[in-house]
Length: 299
Image (cartoon, rainbow, N blue to C red):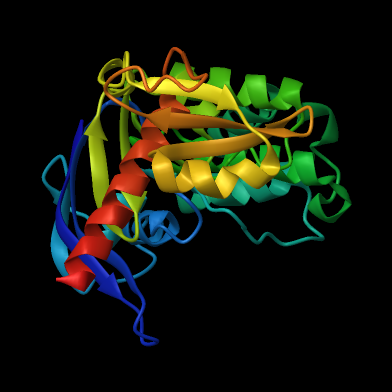
C-alpha cells in the first residue's frame, strides 16, 4: 500500500492557509504526523478522509484518486477524528452493526461476529448493550477506535487518539495499532511526541501548514547527536539565555527552568551534553522554520 500526496494546499475563507504545498509519500506501517495545535494536521486528515476539499494538489491511494473517487476510498478507510458524533440512545453493539452494514457487510451473522470480536479488542464487549450516551470519556474513545478499525480498512487515520485514555487503555490502543499497522497504512496525527516515538517507523512534522521534516524518527534523532546541551537556570536568567543561545525548549524542574539548547560545540557556561530525543527534533524543526519565515518577512 502507498499513499502519495502531492502539493496539497487549503486556504479557509477567513484567509488562514491551513495547508501549504504539502507533499508526502506514506507506505504500509505506522506513520506519525507531529505538529503543534494549528499546524494543519486536522485539515490534512479531514482532506484525506474525504470530508473536505483541497484547493489544489493530489492524493492517490494505490491508484485511487482520494480527492475524486471518494466513495471507493471510503470503503477502504477507517477514521477517528478528534471529536466524533454517534446516536446517543443507540447501544454500542447496534451502532457498530450499523456501521458494518454501511461498509458493505450484508450477512447478519458475519456482522455479529465482526462486531463481537471488535468490542472484545477494545474491552467494551461487556458494555455492548449499553447506550453510548452512558459511556465515560475513555469508553467513548475506545468505541471510536472500534468503529475506525471495523472491517479491516486499508487506510486508517486517527487524529489525537489517546485523549481521554488512561495508561492501560493507551497501551491497549498502541498494541492495536501496532497489530494492524503491519499490512495497513496507519496515520497517527498527534502533538504528543511520545506517541510517535513508541509507535511509528515513519514520521513527518507539520508546522504552519508546511512539512518541515519527513523521514525516519531514529535518523532525525541521530542527526542531533552531540548538539543538544542542557542546563538549569534561574527564572530571571531565562530571557538572557534566550538571547544568547538557540534555546529549543524549557520546562520547570523543581521550580527552576531546565533548558535545552542546540549548539554544534560545547557552549561551556555550565551546560552538559545530553542524548537528544524526538522532542528535541520537533522543537528544532519548528523553530528553524519560524526563524526562516521571520528572515523572509524581513527581506
